[in-house]
Amino acid sequence: MDKEDFWNHINPLQERIFRFALSILKNKEDAQDALHDVVVKLWDSKHRLMSEKNINAFALKTTKNYCIDLLRKRGEVLTLAASHQTPATGSSYEQQDLIALIKNRSHQLPVQQRMVLELKDFQGYSYEEISKILDIPIATLRVVLSRARKFVLKSVTHEPG
View 1: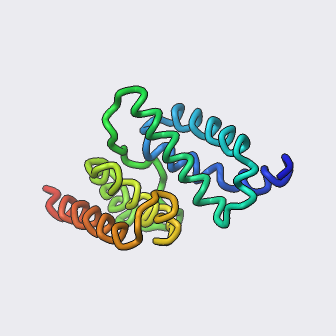
View 2 (view 1 turned 120 degrees about the vertical axis):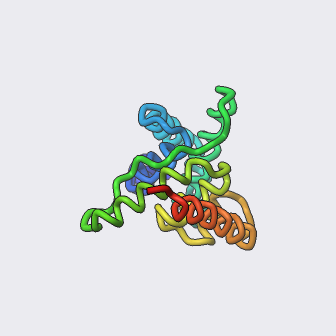
């Protein structure tokens, strides 16, 4: 894989890598640094990229591993912050408020549930893609997602006010 092929595959993924890193690291500067470091790691393993069926899943798996390793090195607790994404344009204000509330509540989830919820509900990945990214069986993934959604739903529906 030459430099041009690499960038043709990786350049469109940079925004997703950044958002996923941001959802784990909770800080834009750290997520930007993670993006840079992950791209370097992907370049270093470009020989492996050629054999990957799903480069997107490989890139996000690399991002997940990098971010979790970084948090461990820092001695930080592995929780995920609410994403700083803005809702899709054209959404009603009520939908935007609900999405923001869900994202705010989801920061209380365990790291695995948060990653699954982020990838499935906010980034739109399939069960197969998430299974590959997180290295968990699809059956387990469905259980984890169900628990995450139940927690967030219960939290949102019991919101005072």
